[in-house]
Length: 147
Image 1 (cartoon, one colour):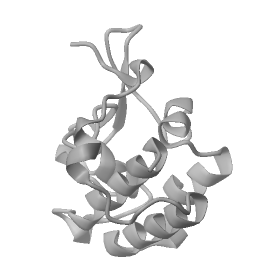
Image 2 (spheres, rainbow, N blue to C red):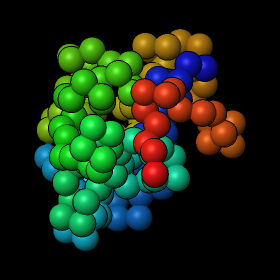
Image 3 (cartoon, one colour):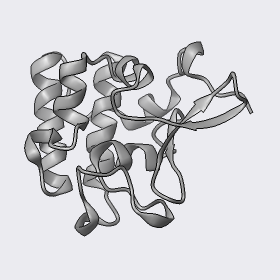
Image 4 (cartoon, rainbow, N blue to C red):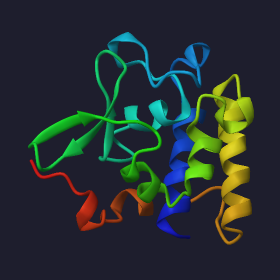
């Protein structure tokens, strides 16, 4: 399975394992205290699944910025997001836009939408990847954050 499919399936996993499903909202990344809201916000909140994005305490989507030696606010259609997930502008809006995931109103529907998207875009992708293998796969140098 390719790394982009795996990352999108990690988004689906983060949605399925949501600790606050009632706060799901595709219109915002997160709520105060860093509680995730949308699909991308759930993924960003799961630093056990990735180390490229995170949610700030105010619910902003943040990405590492090596040039500034810290983190900067970002948006779903940033070039980093496009390359991280291997998506086109149209696809990233379809999944992560404010009406993304087929206008999903709960994390379960959003996860199912993403799983179906992955199955259509990458027919060889499995819906239940080996999570341990994914966690041990190194990030490309361009996505690594130095401490």
